[in-house]
Image (cartoon, rainbow, N blue to C red):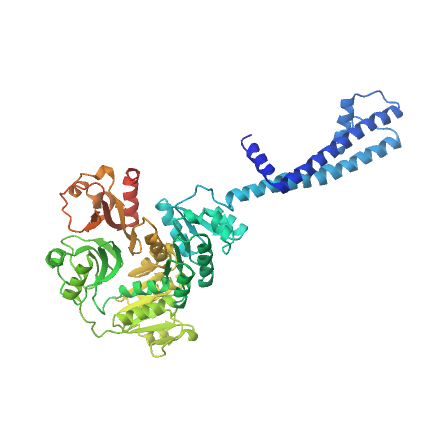
Length: 566
């Protein structure tokens, strides 16, 4: 009954269905009239053949058994007239019950039911009260990673799909979808875009431009974030109404170049929380090598905090006795002035180094090369497609899976290999191959999908950055009230209001690293960020914690304290 009433209500709300329902009633009336006519005729033919008189119920019984082709045979005619009448009843029953009735059931009940089920799985409109949601306009690797983060931090979202079959497929995969044409203003009205937190579009540049321009017809205030494959598209996307345009390939190249050991030892800023700057710096060829963090006295001399160190693809939280080695990348936190002071004291001019070997001359590979040039480092790119060659002196055309090609590019003399192809299987193959050829070199790899990050680490990569994760984290950083910064794959810095149960307690007593795996970076209160934290000072109310930790550490913190955070 609970299912039947909503189903009937849905049927009555649809005008074509109401028309079909009238036709159904006509069919039922025709069938009832035919059964009545056959039942009456049955009595006349029985009387004509001289049989004993039957009740009216018997007449209906005989008509229904013959029309339904059951034919029990307990009541029969003797004359040819009776047999001819029985044949007529049987044939009409075949037509009505085996042809017309199934068609009627499918047309008036099954098809509308399927339509109602499809509408429930992939609606064409969001409820009027929907607000503070994220609207996504296409499904790709970045969106897949972004949805996982939105669900983790309890943001409502909807994924638009112009095709019903695609919408149903995405729904069955677990996504919240809505059917609508991406170039129709009415779609965004029905998606409640004026009440949304933002619109994120990650398709090609032309479609992203159309989406942004269409959204602006409906809402002038809702933020629109778009990705751009070409630098020339940035201005056009901004003119179309985008608040932020992300050149993910360029950012990926810069992030990969920052990981290269050697070259300059500048502390490169990778993120910020108000006045707080997060930076990474290689320490090779600096006076810090060989010292412990306590001996470096970076906090006392500069005011900068070392959050942790990367070595061979592994992140470790900073401790006073952590010893700095030449292969480390240190993660720093401090003000912009602190970072500048660090660079004055510890930045060294790049030494004469062998060119960095970049495998893949696509957008990410070229962006990596440009970032390396800015750092004063030379490079060689191995590219399979000749039409991608930009500088013949720095390109080697050929298959990187061939030893001759790699040797021509300098695999035996380089200190670092950066694998940047778009195919994860290829990246895993080349990482294993390069590690076998040169066990001592640094290997940095790009991953298209998040799930292949661990595989690339096992294959021998020192650092792995996921394209999908980077795009998703940048969009999350731009979300209103969101404060998440990806330091590296699987390692985030995030800001969260101090739970009420922690107010007044001392950090020394809480022991966040032991309980959650997170390390405190800073405390933000009254618009100011304090990095020099006394572990014996009680935590204040109305303040925020800036924490660094792995994805698992982050999950543990949220499980322990999310119920206490309003």
